[in-house]
Image (tube, rainbow, N blue to C red):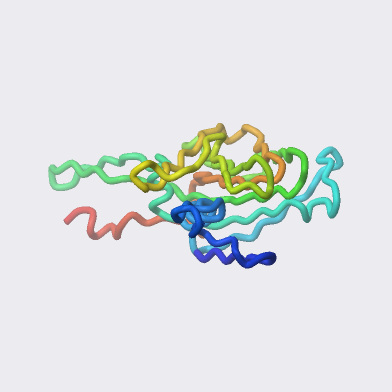
Length: 206
């Protein structure tokens, strides 16, 4: 997947701060997670606001929702794979079963919390939870970014921080904070458009 960005004002907001020992700016972390979670296949998304949503301005246009198939590596790292055992020629084989999954990114340009009803999002009976990544900041001009309320900052050795998700039950409403970005990884069974293949079956029993 490709993420494009444009600096409309100033032309000086780079992904890395060259005036501060190349410290990553907030867009760097968001771009990195986008590349990790959003696969190449883009899915069609439609949604509607209810009268109780209290969306201001241009109503639902202040909320952006995008969906992609989740890459194989991201599904594994989120812990959604399970072991499958098979006997063949008196030898036990153990290989992972990887569910299909979708990754959503939700952008809230509102000054208020937006709550999304998860019942309209397809889920899996086998995997009852989803992973969430909430990006927030003290204000819209801040160069500090928080991931699930933890400030992201390179370590003393210059390594990138861990991107730790929070696990939520699939039936829990999705709360998107004001002026924030949320990434979701949701496992789904039998979603052929996003089917994951670990490796060809002929290679499993060599």
